[in-house]
Image (cartoon, rainbow, N blue to C red; front, side):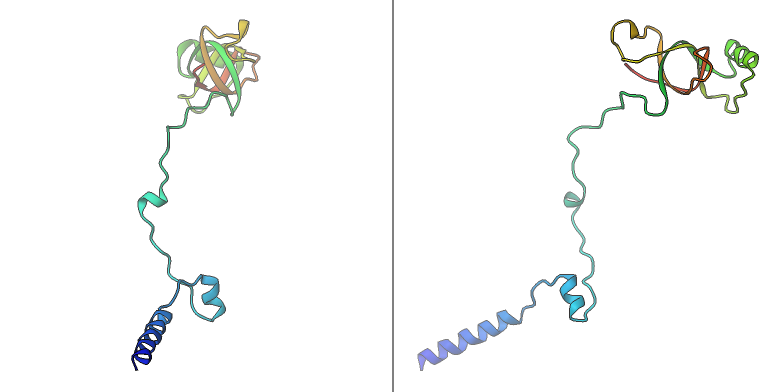
Amino acid sequence: MKFSAVFAVAAAAATVVGAVPGVETNAQRLARGLPPNPPTRRSAAEVMAKRSKPSSPPSQCNTGSTLCCNSTGHANDGLIGLILGLLGVVIKDLTVLIGVTCSPLTVIGAGSNSCSHQPVCCTNNSFNGVIATGCSPINL
């Protein structure tokens, strides 16, 4: 009698444990004709990975040529405005940085190609180094 009571309790426990639904994938649910599970929220620690260090600024000029200019300024500066006028160059944005008397930097910081003036990255150097437009300063 004791054996049958223990067996009955074990069978009941197995039935209860078997009735607890397992975690189904959405593919299994869709195959059975059920809707997919709702999305689960994850904690902020799992979603956002911590950066080990901040990214460094780019060291190369990706938008144009790297130049060493004797001076830089804006289109509305006196001498630069005069040069632009003599060359017939019309600049719509007067705040754009212009490089004057520029030479190309092929290898940054190597030998005679080092820049003792203002290194810039310019998008338009079609005036043979007299002026270059669309410049942004860079650090060597």
